[in-house]
Image 1 (cartoon, rainbow, N blue to C red):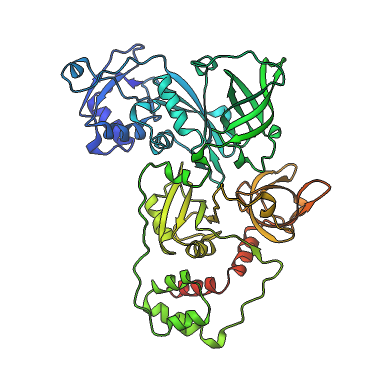
Image 2 (image 1 turned 90 degrees about the horizontal axis):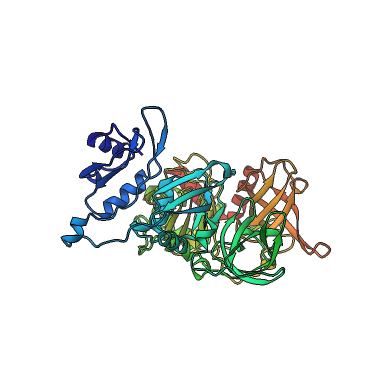
Length: 543
């Protein structure tokens, strides 16, 4: 789909406009005959495969305008080597491409670009020849946060390899919702190649692979016995939250035929197993397939006399002590002078409305700007201690950060959650991210009548009803507008503080009261953070 009037200079300019570096421009171009008189294909030669991969990520999915005003989407794939190269031993002979295979990717954040999709392939370890050469968003399936994308692969084998690597890969939406991408081959006949299509009986118990799952509309598709089965969340037993249902899982279910639709449906579904890679937070970090080197914080200054005594008197944690030691001596002295022993108060007693948090050294971050880099993420959190590992989730609006200690993560959450750091367009949501394989029972995550932190998972502005996820990841509890003690403007991902109790009658937890105003939530969390946060806030003001 290259305009026929393009020459080498125009091709170079097209690359530059897509952000390709000068050293990565093609060294030669061959234009192929046009079939419609307006556009043509071309073969471009690059220095090596690494350059080709960088160019492919930059350019695939970009649009061009032809001389008649038609919009065309650039498609790129690695070409087979020329026969003379194979004869000369410069390249291996590759089989001719069979009919291309179309794959539907679900749970893709709607801000994702084709470059983000290709980068996700690269992060998950896909080889260049297995990259899709066309990525198109389907506007019919856009929701507030997610969309579907159509990916076209050169061969069925490439599509299958991509599905094996990508199903269940973690992405993050703008509101902070963590999703797992799903992939399914668009054509049932192609998807069943190599499978035997069995005769099924009504009510037959089967096990199959959950190929994709729409987290917004709460349905997906299971493939088993050579058939595709529609599955809705209401048919899943024992699933406390959407996070329990992830693409790539093995599902046991009963087959039910819908004669009016000529389709099979899955009923009485149960998650049998989740792929090992999805069982822990490690999967988010492992998507990059590379070693991670801890990033140490800035070096410490020499402590001013009396700082150690001051920290001991005020019973400050080691992470805050280390944080203070990285400040200029003049700031350290100002803190010591301000908080002399005459102002020390006895620690407050734990009150009933004290927000109950369970700190861990892993954090989930939401609300990042679209152009936020990995280096900027590390710089932001290195001020609190050593960043063991960090990972921006595609398309770069959310991230996981792992600190060296729980104390370092604690002060990062206390100082950044619902705050707007310098240069940020809005407040961040920074919360603890316990690994999904932790042994805490769901009912133990909701102690009765204690104030808990959560985020809005779903909210219907018309019925004024929705669900709150405990700490953003835990069990989902139903909530209505009548539970709120204020009048917030809620959206998916909004932080809330709430109390709940177990209802024997309904056999589920019920939200008793809820605070949804961001200022109210921020002030309550700040009041619970203790002396360490007050000292750090004063030090920042001095700086």
